[in-house]
Image (tube, helix red, strand yellow):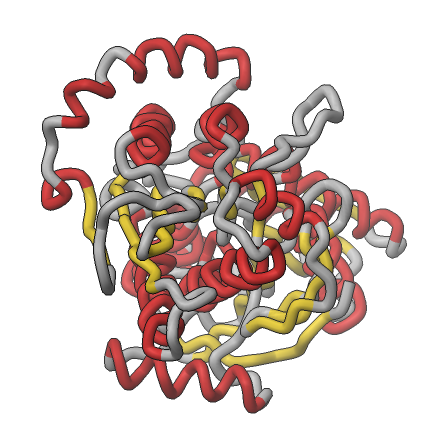
Length: 405
């Protein structure tokens, strides 16, 4: 999930944000975030009675659906962990701060969690652009930071090839989703002539489009049309009309649910009946509200998991989540849940709440079995794991298949 802000802005953002740390200190937890804890709330280091995990999440703003879902999944995991005795005998306190779906606010939230709340580890924002805005803080304060859904490659690897030492992720990366979508179009749907309609303001969408196009061409297919839109657009009919005139057998639409819902609705109104496909950015109940259940028929997404997957472990998670929240968990719920367990596993293997020790344990993760898959971490801090293909049927997501890396 990404919206890119240039790395060159980090220094200026940090300096500006530092000026308001004092102001942030005056804010109460009810203003800045929410805290779920058991035991004392004093301190977060080796001698503390609790282990503090921060959540720098989009709880309001453009992609609030993502951050709110991650928070719910994380809270379920922490509730389970505390009920089972905590981590190394210590209870876990979760401190969630709203970054308002904005890069500058994500930076401010990271500073607050690092300097005021003194968290041991941090769940990073949902969107890659917001994660990138916090990477410098994670590295500076040596706080292991894990994003549940920041899928852009440059979340963990900078443009110069260096690695953000303290930034990790629980999700797979965008190029893998693009490849899976292209192979699905070719192998499962038999499409040879395809079109791409991508959000030109988002690195997330552009990265997916690039990997999809490369794989389609390697599969012997042809991209017969490419069009672009930008975030916050609402009228897509002129570009959709141009796409329709190319007569594609399949249209790949990487982007976020707010625009995609309108795109799908308007595409069907224009008589475009071809299969449409996107990635995890589509995954929100709001998508169905915007597009309409009927318009979403014959559409597909790549995603991190499916609540319909018959795997016993997954169904156990679904049952626990539904008991707590009275709704079926989506992929962001599952990724938030998994991110807490990923951090827990690293702390336990490190035998310490020291940031450097936890960072080392995160890099050494192998064959960790979680709800969204079993994975090992590569040299770029990316988990190597499976993807799931889902199909929308009458407004509901249906499990289609699972694809291994």
